[in-house]
Image (cartoon, rainbow, N blue to C red; front, side):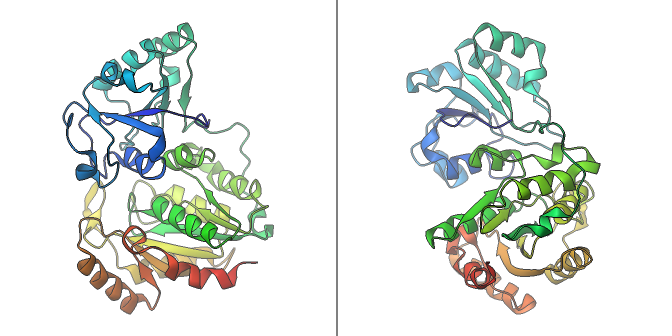
Length: 348
């Protein structure tokens, strides 16, 4: 289910306000800044939001929902996407308070807020909506390979790990393409992307046999565009999230890939015993997995250099370009023009 088109959001992060734990909050603030009126986090109340997460200048942080009501919010957004996607018990009071104060609830958790009897009753009594963004549409088909028939150029972001910048890279490429008057569309495949774009399917909540069908449906429903930027999920070498990555690859049948990597990260997220594999190895693996169905190439390397100086980031970019013989950049620090120079000649 998609979130409402016009929103005045307060975002709940409660003790999880950092770029990894609060990935949903950070991305919504980055790309929907004008819709966010406040953040709820008693551990950081009164602090400078931009100093903590790098975005959100001027957005206040409060301890309680009631403290935000003078800003006329209409919805509370759950700002985290934890492993397993369960609602922290300590957050129930904030959701209850929001519903009691006439605020809709928007959640990207695996646990559906709308299925909670207490919250469902409060929403009904106050004529409010609970938007469980991860809930997939009904009647998703099994993948058939029809995405290959779509004339649009399909670009999929993939990664050396999960939670590494695939969505941001896809959005930045889409926005840069639109500035060049290219008929481009960002294709959201996760809860945060859906909150930003307003449409999509959270493929990690689709039954495994139908992941490629969900990805294919996203492509077929947007066949009118010239350029489709598909948000990647996980990585094919992650013990927990490999299935969704492979399903996206075979469902969207991309003609091009952008590989995403974070130079400072040495082990897989949530699995510290497993090292991050070298970028060239991951490139070869993805290209081989795509080969039987839709031959495609990695066209560039997107580096997440958060926390690095510009000079440090440039050294990592130059290193990646030497190792891969591909254009590399940090989309936030330096933009994605390098990628567009390679992609634009391939568009129909």
